[in-house]
Length: 121
Image: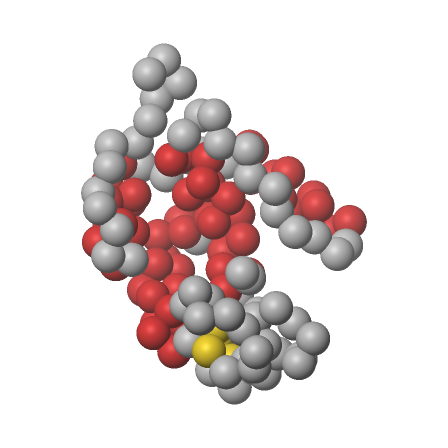
């Protein structure tokens, strides 16, 4: 939903025609009343250092999180510019997150902790 791009702040307001806007469905927990949910903005701040380790941008960290979860994962990131495509592709040249980093993120996000999948497993 874009929170991990780093471009949304507590004061951000989404357009009425945006699916995350004022008329967002009830299941939309990341945005409320057309604004980023403060609880989730705080969680992004809490995991920022982990995701940006090893020289990653926040978006690359989000992609690394997905790629680390499963070798069968095929993230389909959004992009609007060539620079964003290049940034996304550069993620493949960076190390995956460690099990300790994944566990820490799961704790912050209040997700059940799982072992990182391996290519062989």
